[in-house]
Amino acid sequence: MDDNRTMISVLDPATGEEIGQVPDGGGASVDEAVRRARASFTSGVWRHMPGAQRAKVLWRVADLIDQRIDELCAMEARNNGMSRGLARAFTDIGTEMFRYYAGWCSKIHGQSTDLRVGPDAASSYEYHAYTSLEAIGVVGLIVPWNGPLLCAMVKLAPALAAGCSCVFKPAEETPLTALMLADILRDAGVPDGVVNFVTGYGETVGAAMSGHDGIDKIAFTGSTEVGKIIARAATGNLKRVTLELGGKSPVLICGDADLAQAIPGAAAGIFTNSGQACTAGSRIFAHRAVYDRVVEGIAAAADALRLGGSDEADVDLGPLISARQLARVNELVEDGRNQGATIVTGGAALDRAGFFYRPTVITDVRTDMRLYREEIFGPVVTIMPFDDEDEAIAEANNTQYGLAAQVWTRDVSRAHRITRKLDAGTVWVNCAVAFDPSIPFGGFKQSGWGQEYGWKGIEIYLRSKSVFVQL
View (cartoon, helix red, strand yellow):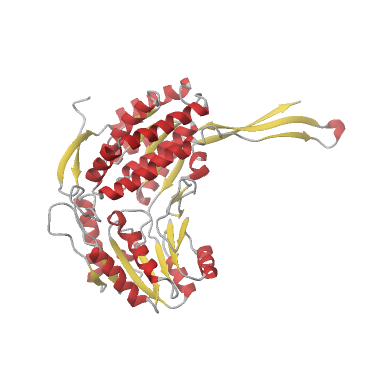
């Protein structure tokens, strides 16, 4: 290791104490990682491996994760601050990504057809034409801190299934489970040089990857602001870019909704992972007929949540990721309070070590408030009443984002009608935060480019070649 490299402190958000250090690799480490990835791609050690063999390796990755599940989840919870239970749920989803994409390894193929081209039979040409799908090359994978292990698996599984070689950057706040995953990939049989991990800051390692001419594609999950920076940097060699970005997801609770389901569902949609989720349902619109009951119910759900560190018993929510994030959440809530918003419950940090913020419910919000318009990434929800369905839909869409939405109603026709009109890549009807490896996920507007999960999730790591053979 180069002793001149800056070391990054890794903290436990529940205590603020250092639990490790990783180097800021910088541009030189990215160059070396790209060189190794390119060498492995050129050699074909992974991409030319028969699909059935690649599938076996990816399946072994999943099995090894299962074998180390307790160790991985303990580290994920401690490094990120999430509860052990949530860490287990996220890891289980990620493990299934490897099994799901293992199944695609032997099913990547193009199309073929026979053509006759020309004005008539006497002067035409016959062709056998086909397309083939190939791994796009060396891909750069950049993941966030709010679900570090899950996001790593969501990107690595399809990229490896497609036959790509990878340069992987974990978030500087949460690199520890990524480094454990590196050991698992090696033990499962992924050849040396196929996946290369580089730790460091976004402005050093992330920037070097985004602008690197040796990287053919970037897949990024994170903020819209950083996504735009990556898109601009990618123009150097016109690398392809997939972006899963921010959200300000609306939740529409209609007058006929089953509140016994809608209230806990909407509460889970905003407070899970302390609101640190791109899909968090942070704007609730409740029909005036049920508005008071929704406000009361969401506030009661918020007050019932137990906050604590990953090593504490009976914990529902952990801390925010950092002192910086805690300060941002508090700033936005205080800004709303100063402009006349009503804090129904919460609205303050916990008086203890760590970066804890109380689950917060806010009413009397104006649509021009930062609190209402900006992605907070904390356990904070605004609730507004509505009378007219079309007006509620228009306001739900009145945002730069379009990642996800929820609709709660007993009326099937209303559910489909509202769903058609919402500008969101994923809509949950009478449920919240449902995912499956087979169903594509991605955003509209400034919530991103492209989709992950399902066939779409592997297609983004492939390129199509057309071949004409004259007969």
